[in-house]
Amino acid sequence: MRRADRAGGHAQGKAVAAVALALALALAAPAAALPQDWPISWPQTFNWSDSPVLLDLHQYGGFNDNILNSPPGVQPKASALSQTGVGATARLRLGQQAFTASATLTATDYLDDPSASLHDRALRLGWDQRLGEPCKGRLAAEASDKQSDFDQASGPGQDILRTRKLDDEGRCAVSGPFGALVGGGASSLRHSTVSAQALDNDKAYGKLGLDYEGRNRDHAELFIKLTGLRFPQATGTLSPDSTLTDLQASYRRAFSPLWEARAMIGASAAPTTPGAAPNQIAVYDAELLWTPSELWRASFSASRTLNAPISIVANSQIAQTLNLSLTWRPTPKLSFTAGLGRLRLENGPTTPGLYGGTTLNTVSGRAVYQMTPFTSLTASFLRGIRSVAAGQTQTTLAMIGVDFKPY
Image 1: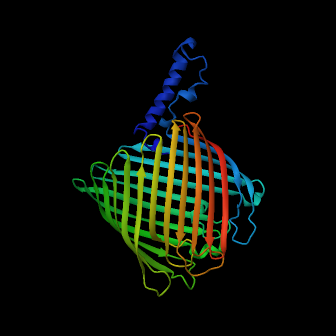
Image 2 (image 1 turned 30 degrees about the horizontal axis):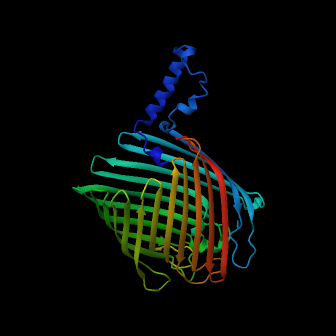
């Protein structure tokens, strides 16, 4: 979708012109002047990235040895699976304003347990705003219903997250490379698993700050962000309303074609349980990218953040992450990526059906072969070991499939 977003501002005009040209050739040119395989060759020669509506298809098969995310002490259920995904993206540009809309539907069918099959769906809308030269921003809306990601699971079982989000953030130039940042938004999160519904929350936030856009892809930000949290099903260890305060400074720079880095440091504060003093911690988020050649790329990242709770019934939870990845591209069509990850979620009040404090270690691998400009073959592997107070759970997911993205 990123490449599609970078298509020219006259996407619709080009698409109409291409269709008109094809019709003119068909009507006016002698049959001998057309390619012998026309119109069969037309889908291959047409520049699909110029289309105002872009479609993509994905078909995967694989195996998951813990489809129900079973807790320690419970025999996990394994199954072969088939996963089909369909997506569409529409684009429209009116003067300086650009609009996008995308919809995705993914059906995951477990062949050995059809009752566990899932249907994830998402709708996203975007408006790239431009107010003359000095001000620009983006308004984004999202509505999705999907199973929680592996690293965001609150507890055992299949938890479907219902998310609704609206964000509007922008920047206005103030003087030279300096600009003012302003933003705000709201979101709603609902869990399908009964034991996790105490973590349902509504958010609203506001953000103010300054930034600097310099040469050599230098970028720095300093901002304060206030987030109001409301828990509609709060229990005794969870206050119905709380406020999360973030004060952060960040810097990103490309030091050379080989090295690129970004770093954020700051402080966050939020209460943990009713009546308790706000939990004030230092936070950070850093990443280092190394690209010694066109064949190799390595990245390392680490973070410590304070956010809404994921696996404990509290008003906030500390999350710490470490990630390392290495990519090798021996040919323009073939690439291999290996990764190691570690997620540590702070312990808190023990609640049946939730993980509580947890440590998740993952090993992953991915190979991609670009068969045609539009079609790629992908094989992936994920091994996760989650440690909780009651013991460990292990999950292995292996997938192979085809992605068709004609743009």
